[in-house]
Image (cartoon, rainbow, N blue to C red; front, top):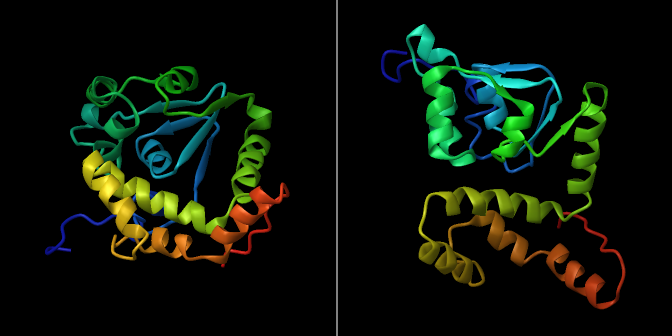
Length: 195
């Protein structure tokens, strides 16, 4: 498109990194090489788990272009700046173990357990209130781009419906919000409905 420039399609490369209004938690289970676009797709998720032999690499610099399908926009938010620059400038392989060291990867597990591990993590998340997961993703995106002062102000404004954080405000007014407090007071498991 001459007007918009190079377009990677809906959601960006692989259909994930540019879904900015996707409020469902997304887990990447990396089982092997996450190179270039594969690494950028993983950066479009909320949590990354990897098999012991998995690795990550951004070789675009050695090919004459930038990893602009998500890495230049997000990697420095997930690992220290100097690590992000090193990975993009050199294109070197980042092992699963080193990725865990830098906080990019949550868990490193044997290859034959990676999908079961990712599913167990998803089941753990799914036990929580669905509106809270949506509100959390919305708030974390907002908070990443603002000062602590503005983040606290938005939190206070959410209680009065003036924050602009639609999912957060909806969560505060939900039946699930009240159910969580009641379950805690009654020392029982909450029964969340998503309403």
